[in-house]
Image (cartoon, rainbow, N blue to C red; front, side):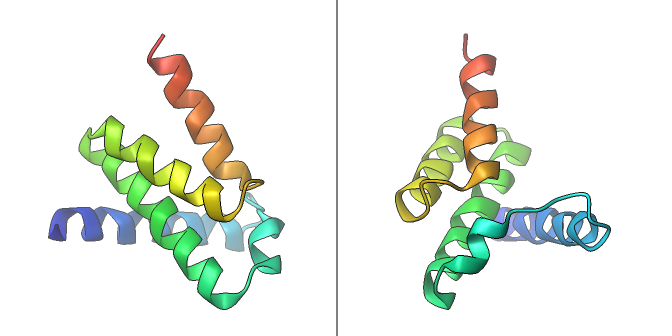
Length: 88
């Protein structure tokens, strides 16, 4: 449990660094309510943490949870595409 949170925090920090440099943009999130944005971020970063920990089934579940909240979340769509290619 704590490992997942730690990995999520590391991933979040790396994402924020890239966003600050203008390397990443996902403007769709900004149109969501604060509550939904928190949910999206929680599930997205948990998905990234599960990926880092090698739990690919949970990774996919988390990204799918993001898409239920925000069907246009580009980073989750890209990650799900990568998962599908990896599982071929």
